[in-house]
Length: 247
Image (cartoon, rainbow, N blue to C red; front, top):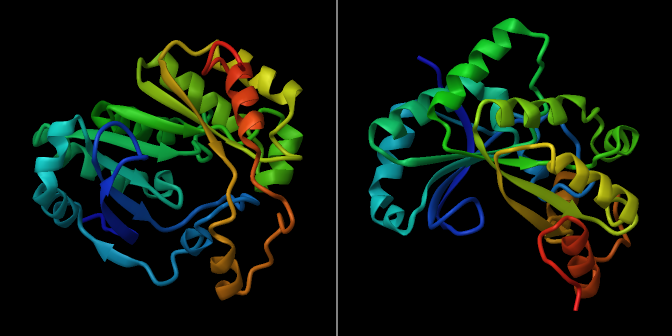
């Protein structure tokens, strides 16, 4: 029986997909994003293990929330590091007619790995929505920001589009890094090649995770970078097509 390595749970989430949601935070992530506010999910250290049935039984206690159009979201960490577990949880949720959302960077996707693609093909049978984080559209800048190339991320977006899986694209706006007209325009051009994007979310960078870095003894690499101003966020939303004007 596959078991999931879990960081925590949150009942009543309103920013992790449509409606009110039961949110599962898994452990483990191959990225080291400079702005990550959950560095405590990077490794499997301290994880609690749960079977899929245990997760679904707990989620069903909050079924009343789901009448809002909500459901269950698995986030992290990087959920796709535990793709077999996520698939089993989603399969059980769909038996109970619960909306499923996956919050991911898509980083472990590999279109040249046939065995892995089979696992993705199975997962998307039970996935209603993918919240896809596009960290940076420029590959070199993506490597500087996260430690990894964005090639798998962009290929995953194409895979979802080709398989008619609904997406919300999420993009964190960081001054000096992603707050750049050239990169924002290129991001919009890429998004426009996808046919199943229902929504684009611009997430302003924040510093709420700094204390976690201090507690974990990890250097915080964006020390001194302030959150973007309201007008900068609005301008980015305009360039990404989220709003029609900047007035």
